[in-house]
Length: 448
Image (cartoon, rainbow, N blue to C red; front, side, top):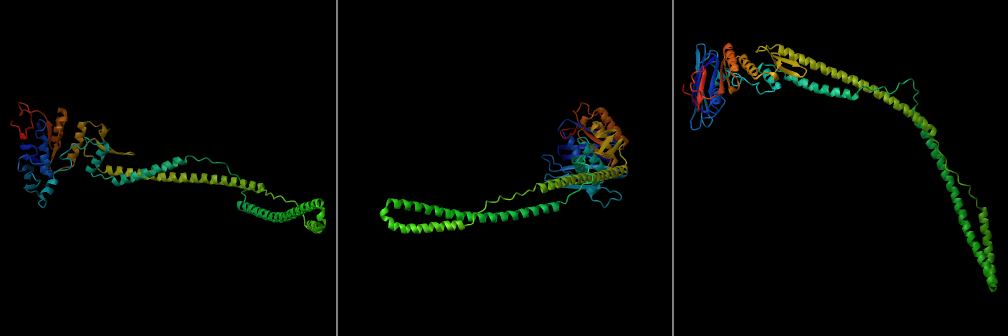
């Protein structure tokens, strides 16, 4: 299906423009900057895809009319746009087998996502080009990529754990070791402590009894000393005052009696024995045994820790290998998927490696493609999608040199495609000298 021609009135910058096309090849729309070249491409996108634009200032309606032909069948497409953004579409004609389609559904079947921009790779990164290519070719790696991403994260974390473990060294060689019974050793220590506490309690009771005896003797001795002092005072008083001798003799007798009684009490008291020293608890023997046993237990713990690390490392390595194996299988599945799709462009291939997918053209990765190669790949992908309407539209073609434009024309003829490109250029004195070129100035077709 080919575009016979189209006309534009009051759309964006275009006042009035009309263009008639041949069967295939490159058609150039030229003119100075800001004269409406891009508006021509946008008007075709408005006509076929329904992408709204704007009505030229001062106009009451924008209209774009296109004529397409497929063999003996022809269609006229007319789309209007009002300043308040209301759109009206009419399609005159019919297509066998598609009579039940709505007008826009009929138009959607004529084009594809590359029709109005066959250079999608131009400003894309390598990853974005791969994504666009796989979408165009119907290759869906989303499940595999999602699982691979998850597995790579798990594998990375597992690898870090393996690295953290390192290569554990055997702390020592264990021969036959007589491991003491720590429970019985602690029980023996507890028994010794209890016996010591009992002996300590007995000594405390004994010492308390002896202290009580000493307290009594001290009390009686103090009283005796007091009486003795009184006796001495009385004797001195007798000597000083003989005239009171008679009265004091009776008192002396009383005091003598009391002194004798006090002496008797003291003599009758049981004198305390010397204090016993507190018993000394010697735990050095059992402590040494416990220390030796704990040292052996520490060695056994070190050995167990070593064996646990060796097992953990082996388990992690198995887990890592399983992740790696699944990642390899998923990549193989992606390769098998890609192999089922034939590349629509000679020399273009999708390579799948450990780091993901990458597009190659004539053996070179997409980052190394020349601008002309990017355009060629994009245009051929557009053609490979087999749009019913064999047209592509390229805006901003002034960056291509003469050789690139000639190559694009040859490619369009070879693939039976109509390629329309806009190029910034001043209108020459003889604008009719250039074949397949339409000039536009101030929003109108330049008079030839």
